[in-house]
Image (tube, rainbow, N blue to C red; front, side, top):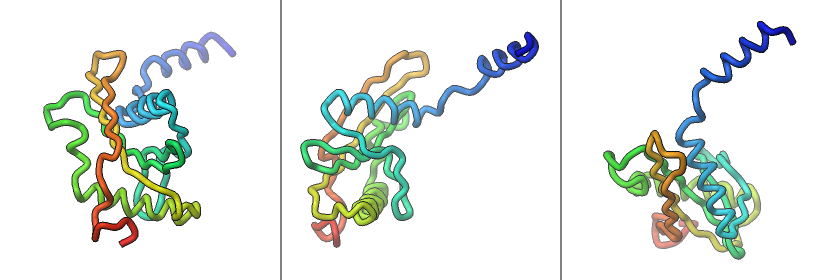
Length: 143
């Protein structure tokens, strides 16, 4: 490669935008969960009309993990963004994922990983909330 081509490549690498905050948060959450003994089976899984940030297995339980990453808590704690409407969407996507992969007979739970990652911080503050919510509905997941 000629010197000019290397210079252009180096300039592009230095000025490309950093990975989006959400993607960095999801990667950090996956690393954290793996260290806790979880097996990550899917990332950004499209199911039905929704997306599941992480799908993991923890001691035989299928765990659907919603990851919320924020630079600050000015808009509230990251986990507060997982409101009832979001929970319903996650439950529908989870059900579609379970049907698609023939996992309906397996136990399921919903976790939230809340990440605070200030702009100048090298590492985020990670808070894992197991059993963050029960699927909304008539008291049953398939209802």
